[in-house]
Length: 200
Image 1 (cartoon, rainbow, N blue to C red):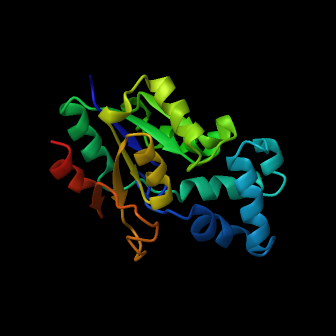
Image 2: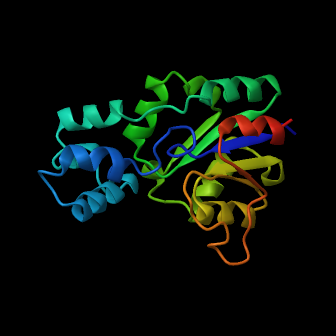
């Protein structure tokens, strides 16, 4: 059976892991306090707010600037082409609102690489809730034992491991590798290019 590589978006395919803190809030700090903005975004990413409701807090011109500042990892397309050439299937599993996820993928012309894209905003579920992972597995038809999941958060990887998926931690911060008791990812990388050594 074909092997499936499942990517998180922010912090993995795209450079910035904390897009609200590092990108959106600096554009909004004169209008709203950070804790309130984060609360509204989390509701949006969980499907509890529509885009129209989100835009009542974040004006359209600010949203456009925000989306344009979300940058693709410099090595993303190279590694996608490599994996495609090796016969891997690829997908996305991300805690992100539908509009943002679809926009950044299409704007960067990478949507054709992915067999399946599952966003938290579509299902009202967020990683590490295993129900969202099961949605991905059902939609893709992938066998967990033939899957690799790449994420920058250990708690999200632990759920994948519990479902029988191999885990790859994209370490982007000086966080404690053993911050989750009794959990260690199968692989740790700091660059997407390192996947060439793992997925041969």
